[in-house]
Length: 424
Image 1: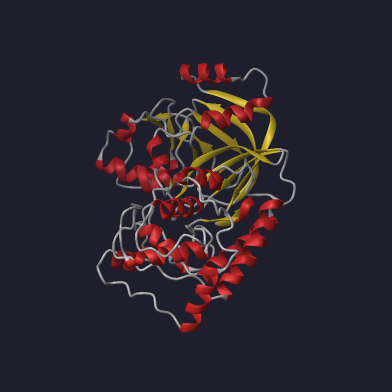
Image 2 (image 1 turned 90 degrees about the horizontal axis):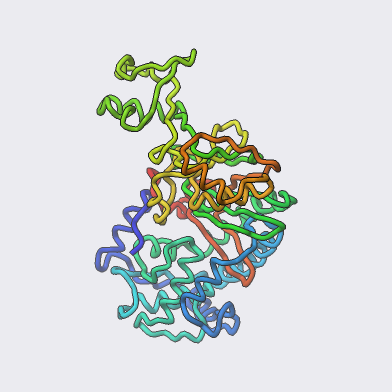
């Protein structure tokens, strides 16, 4: 079941787990009539009327080679806006009033509501019936819905999936319209090769000649330490990097940790230097004050280094960068908003090799050899690669597939889209 991640909607989500706490969907007679017209419309479900295996349907949603930042994406969003306007004009979609988890085998009236909900949004074919039994056809449709919302496609209506399903059609339409403006502003020529970090999707694309060559999961900034929107050029890869702690982490994290555990810096191979470059023993610092903020905190290369094997550098006023991490388990999380503003990259070696394709002598064997040596090594890129950090929480791809993500930083302006916790 999807984990509960919402603060602003916590009371609502909690009530989803209490029998009888959610009122059944009634609506006005006109709205019900309009919804039934949508359900019976011959144009519903035309994304996949054959309704093949769930895995294939999910694969079609996630495996497109179309970049998020492309003119084609903006074109498809325009088409999605027209379809969603029709859905809104016809009364939107019904709420799903579940008081327990819905999955294969469950019999409940909420299963009927789920069918109708997914038919209206085009995830389930119009001929899927009106059964109250959760069957494998509905399982495939739900997994498709979850995939295009960036969720774990487990086929279970848990709290988070339920909350997303019950975001109203007018709000989703507004989200598409807001993001169309963002996409249009970025749909010009971005470079023959470029890297894009989509913050609300916590995802990275490496794009070459208008096609996505690689996708990587990312870990981006917490809501109180947000990853900035920016554009720059990647000019350097550092293998076995030193990590220098930013003042924000020194103040918010390291000083409080040293007050509790005076061995923290030594155990984590972090050394202190004054402004003249002289090393300062940790025991010489008064940790009851903030005097340590004026020192430089540098962590030696190694497996426990905060950037692990690799740092990707690009000039920017925010002092952020992309990097590896020893905390690989975080990439398995649904919500990946855990950093202090920098971007952690899953399978960073593949992205590194892609960046170094134009740098002679830096093939896979050499990169692996240098990483294994543990020696700090700066590798300038022969050809600098544009990099863009963007905030796109809704987009569309070929085949009429519409993607939505949580408005994690509250930039879409609608509380209903902020499904995750503000304290991540």
